[in-house]
Image (cartoon, rainbow, N blue to C red; front, side, top):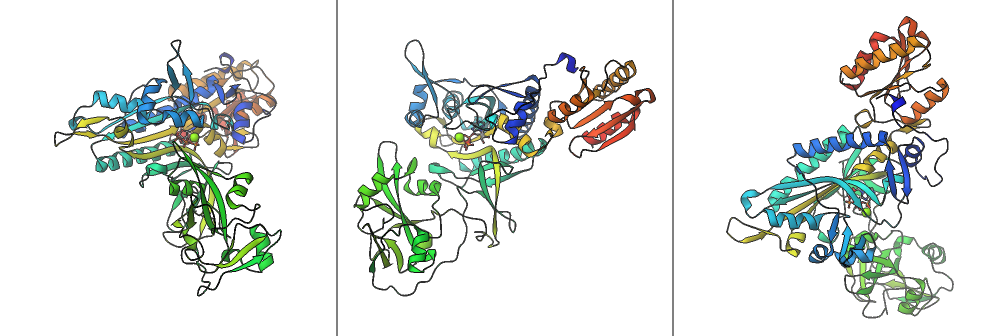
Amino acid sequence: MRFSELLITTLREDPADAEVPSHRLLARAGFVFKTASGIYTYSPLMWRCLKKISQIVREEIDRGGGQEMMMPILQPKELWKSSGRWDRYVTDGIMFALQDRRATDLCLGPTHEEVVTAFADAMISSYKQLPVNLYQIQDKFRDEIRPRFGIMRGREFIMMDAYSFDEAQEGLDISYEKMAAAYRRIFARCGLEFSAVQADAGAIGGSGSEEFMVLADTGEDAIITCAGCGYAANVEKAESAIELVDAGEPLEAEEHATPDVRTVEQLVEFFDMPASRMAKTVLYQAVHAESEEFVAVLMRGDLDINEVKLCNAVDCLAVKMADEEQVKALTSAELGFAGPNGLPEKVKLFADRSLEKQSNLLTGCNKSGFHKLNVNLGRDCPDPEFHDLRMAKAGEACPDCSAALTETRGIEVGHIFKLGTKYSKAMEATFMGRDGKPTPFTMGCYGIGVSRTAAAAVEQNHDARGIIWPAPIAPFEVVVAIVDVKREAQVSLAGEIYESLLEAGIDACLDDRKMSPGSKFKDLELLGFPLQVTVGRKADDRVVEFIQRKAGDKEEVAAEDALPRCLSFLRP
Ligand code: ATP
Ligand code: MG
């Protein structure tokens, strides 16, 4: 491809709303154009990257036994009613719901479990047709609360979504492992540094859920890892071991006047007592499908509540911290004095495991200006339900090997998930089992954010001058740049090298744009092609410059050496 025939427009200014490098660089290099909030147009160069990522995804999922297909984006409400997800998705506001001219409700697919389960139910009648793994690469639609970081979190984005159907759990375990292996090959082939981490499996439960994270400081997800044994988990799910506090034999509870002493820090000072001797009481509103309730959570003073774990423990759809008015109504006290004793009976009490055996706690007592010392759970308040509700932190001990945990950040580019029979049971999607009985499919679902992967690649690979595309997903592998297009010697030598690269199967392009050498080099650094062959003043002597974008190395080489140099870099 000759640049003179390609639409390339780079901008001088960063977009005003760009918070992260990938957004800034992709916009400035003209790869993406914001059509509306969270909705982007991909330029011809960007589309080349996305097609390369899609092709890698396709090849590796195919190798793992997947079958590519295409499902409709427009989906009827009835399907989502049959799985029981319509109301929640509409209330959450994540789904783009619409009506046709007959006022029939439809939605733009945020995901395709319903459509694919109905398809499998219609197409698969016997266990003899199993296992099956179906996938597509398609635009998904989600009305994200906060679309941001450009194409990283869009409202329309490209996803590979796959769904496996098996006879039973053993089959699912195999299908899942195959997909995990395919994902590893995919992200490795894309040239990305990534990590597979344990993820929260939510209300569906089970052990089978992992996220694939591209490691980057600006990532939205926090990951807890152990260098000792390789344990890695999303902080939403991560566990850790901590030292428990021994506060001795239970003592008699004492009420203390603590005017204006509300926070853990203030209590530490007032009582001259470590935060680990305290239990803070936090009130939450738990949202269920058809109802809402208040729950109280007891957490050791020096530790933090993990709301994802809390949501799982309460077995609800979402939790929201109670607001000031709600706290006052429930505790009959000012903010800062909530305690486990004397709450309304309907408020269920949960506590973190760190408090399970701890005696003589300092807590609030639902009385403005007072706290209670030597509170013993079960004796001075109802018995709470104990769960791991704690946010694991760097420095705490690994749950598996006790080495110190560390925290890093990542961008979730893929997710694999053992669904089991959640959808097949709800939608009565069955096949004839070996025993001749209708049996619900055992399913897995798997997603890769294709467009997000491109953004994550830039987030991980850039410098002050621009993007540094990993070669396997770069819009072109090599750019042959003509310094002065008015010089015949440069034009013809560049053309010769360009042709030789194409003939060798290299995805090369020719920058034959008429512009000053300085702006051209700046532009090419911003665009981020992995290799550049510059044909300039020394074209008469058949000498060119070979540049590796990442290392920044520039070297004069004979024109004849340009091809072997490119080959040894790209196809070692
Ligand atoms: P997140 O927690 O980032 O919102 P998710 O858990 O909603 O992700 P899934 O439903 O598992 O994501 O979707 C599969 C993949 O699709 C994700 O791993 C991610 O790479 C990608 N993805 C999800 N939402 C978006 C989005 N709004 N924009 C771009 N890619 C997305
Ligand atoms: Mg999401």
